[in-house]
Image 1 (cartoon, rainbow, N blue to C red):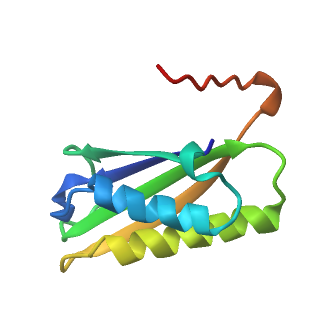
Image 2: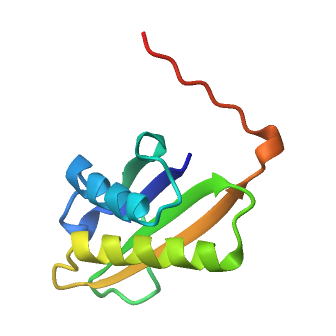
Amino acid sequence: MPHLTVEYSTNLGTDITPAVLRAVNDALLGTGQFHEADIKSRAIGFDSFAIGTVDVPRAFVSAKLSILSGRDAQTKRELAQALLAALEAAIPANGMELQTSVEILDIDRDSYAKSHRTG
């Protein structure tokens, strides 16, 4: 925990690479809320999307951070702001209107199961 999923429009012209994800992971680690090895992130690019109704150059990055329930609203705001800042620093707008958003989602502790094995 946590699990970060970053969705983005591929017209952005910049793939969200493992290096970008590591930079975002570093930002999450810097909050002091998570252990380094527990931070997992992935990115999914979308070729089919629509932003608004006007045909102008627009792109999006949408991050969803799933964390175990129990953190207060202030901590969630701080996590969202840290992620937003890291994404904005790592992903250029490339001359487009770029909308970047972050959502913090709670995972119910009672229904979450995790295994860690070394093979």
